[in-house]
Length: 232
Image (cartoon, rainbow, N blue to C red; front, side):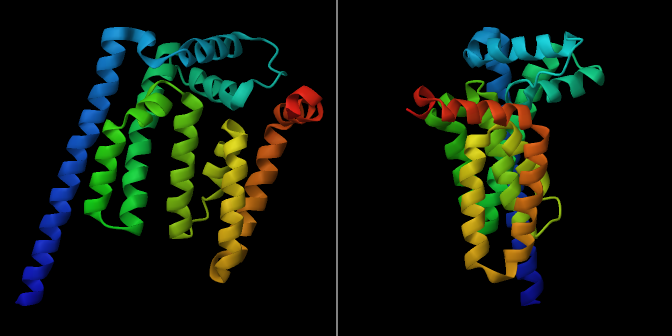
């Protein structure tokens, strides 16, 4: 009887936490949609124009041999082929990614702490001016990088064989952030023997695939670093 009561209480708390997070998710989505509705592209900073130009140029180009910045052109071309408009890719896609990011943040925090802490962290993320400046303000690469990192942490916790997917996306979209992630995951693999083979295998696989897919972009980075001004 006591166990049934404890289980019922646990289920009630879980449902309540889920509903609270759902409300936070609605508030976050509403904030993004309202900014877009009242201010248009101006609400999301200068990145809007940059990515609008990238998507427009790459989706209409006949010669697609030049690799677009941050692999964003490939993503744009894929969704354009599915019939999505430019506004849908930029605005709708951004809002979807932002909502996925805060959901992943909640999941990661819940895995390593508790639902209560996860709700507090989600609320802080939603209301933080730092989050607004560096994520909400239409920095596509930032929000994608954060989302890929959080997805990789969740998949690592589950020891999923899909771990390579967010690592490939992260390396393709934000290679400098990916360097720190690979180092951190590598250190984690060294100190945790039970994850070593699994983690190193995915790091090697994802890194190799990302380098092949983005070889022209990475070659450009290397030439910048070789140049004296680039090193400075």
